[in-house]
Image (cartoon, rainbow, N blue to C red; front, side, top):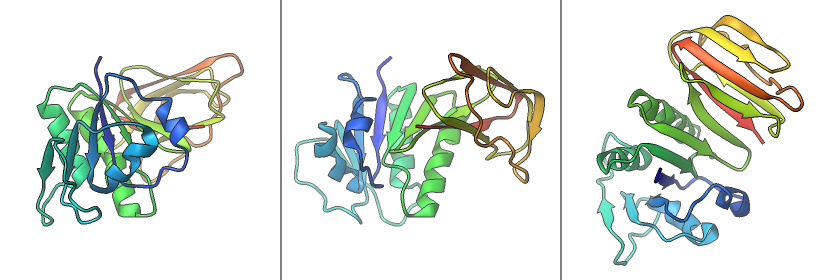
Amino acid sequence: MKRCVIIGGAPIADYEKIKEYLRADDFYICCDCGLDHAEGLGITPDLIVGDFDSHEKPETDIETITLPREKDDTDTYFAAKEGIRRGFEYFLITGGVGARADHTLANIYLLYFLYERNKKAVMINDFSEMEIAGSEKVYVDDSYPYFSLVNIAGTARGITIENAKFPLTDGEIKPGYQYGFSNEVLPGKRAEITVKEGSLLLVKDR
């Protein structure tokens, strides 16, 4: 399935690691200073979006959507909405986790925004992968030293974790008490996670 890859402006230290996730047929959207990552990732944007408050508007033949600086959507949210409008079902987001905690949190919630619209979305950075775990089973293989489940919305019930150091059956996690951190996949196994009601942020640490 062809993917929409959204590249934000947060720092990327290890371009080679991020490049391992990219495919030749990906559709690339660079958001504002996410353009600074294009050369390091070895890609040419298919679309550029932004209000260009952190990068000079490029003089290019590449399709560019210029946004107002005073707006409700961040550049990455606009990029995701534009990807949905263009028919993409699968999103990969990078350059979304950085020093600005507000932007980082908004980008993490962008995964939830896409999940609510039945889109598959994964966010990657130099250290981890993140996605939303819900009623559809998700997996973690033993190449990841740790994984965590974080409640970012409502109450998650009926949580099952199998093939992990800390298994769970019919568990419940509320935002006010997070106990799903630093779990480990059993050697040679693949952890399986399901959530009957609600959803959780799955963080797989590399």
